[in-house]
Amino acid sequence: CDALCNCTNKTACDRVCRSNVKHFVQSVREVGSLKLEDVPRAAPVPVPALPRVIPCIEHRSRRDDRLQSDTIALPLYRVIDLQHGKLHVSSREQLAERFCISADAQIVLSGVEKDRYIERWWELKNRKELLQDLAKLDIGMITSPNYSVLTDVPRTDNLHAIKRIALTWAEMAAAGLPAALHVNARTEQDYRNWQAMVAEREEIAALAFEFATGCGHSERIDWHIEQLCKLAANVDRPLTLIMRGGSRKLHILTQHFSSVTLLETESFSKMRCRRRARIVGDKLKWNPSLTPEGAPLDELLAHNVALVRRFHESPPTANPKLRIPSRLVRRAANRNDQSIQPSLLDGIHLADQARLVATNLHRVIPAPKA
Image (cartoon, rainbow, N blue to C red; front, side):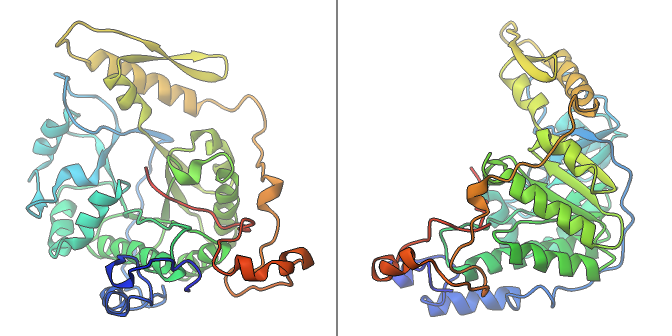
């Protein structure tokens, strides 16, 4: 637990670390414990049918016409006024007007965001009331926040973040919202802990994952894919997966989950950059599409949404396979109480390595956010 505690001023550190006793005790008290077993139970809520690809719409700027789509994803933290602790809207019509989308679209709220937003969500004291207000808007699905699980912090900080993810999911489920549990993990043991929780609780019917940042790195993504597939295989019931990023692995995951949905952000972000989608062979290309100053971007967004959906819904041209880099498969001297005999060469320099992070972090995968 203390292996990565390197702060010179322990009392000023904001990590959940035993070296800062006051902050550590306070942090553990706010989550009850660092285990998942005591997360409150909730009544099962049916998971709605979701399409394979759902566009994420951040705001209505530079658009005049409402985007017509059966299902649309919105950022949770743009629906809620985090500063004042209340919803920006009080009806589905106001929600549609705020984001310039069709009023009858099924809504998915994504809890994935940068740290400053999800930390503000945790600080709100009236989350229960806010979630009840969201339930009145007939939200189709909501995903829990993705609190960071980093590699350069004490282990207790990881466990605290994981527990916060589980607790915020439980709050959403208790409000009667169809909620997807965001699975953030650093080690194989983290995935085993998530698997035990999911297997035991039938109210967990959907998982969420984010590949857009650290977990989507070329040297890490296949390991996370492998762990997610193992989790799905070891849970004796169908599971839905809602993912952001990692679209190139979409077809692998569909072989292991009963349903996989991609919340795609490219259509909207490329629209803002005046880029138009184009399918070239088995690749998605983005060409410049300059517009007159002040011109609306409705047609460009609609085009991007339709083409990106068609691209990701088409079958792969080749059989997708997992590729686990060999250097990630090497065993480390210490991994979650699963010690093995270190190599003799490593043992020669133990004194020098006492305060360093091992370079062979076997299956220890960072999940930072940009």
